[in-house]
Image (cartoon, rainbow, N blue to C red; front, side, top):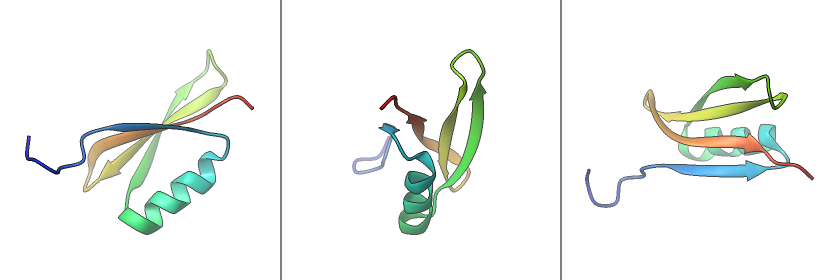
Amino acid sequence: MTHGIFVWNELYTQDVEAAKAFYAATVGWAFEGMPMPDRDRTYWIAKAEGKPVAGILECAE
């Protein structure tokens, strides 16, 4: 691991689509959804240059 390299972060938000749009526009991340049927939501894996770097999940209000 190199000093200063982004490793992993998890974001819990009430507006997943806005968060995905923000990170796509600002740092160029792409997203892959992992359905969580037992919780009726999707866990979104953020990828930088094809490598997973973060997760986004909808939180309860």
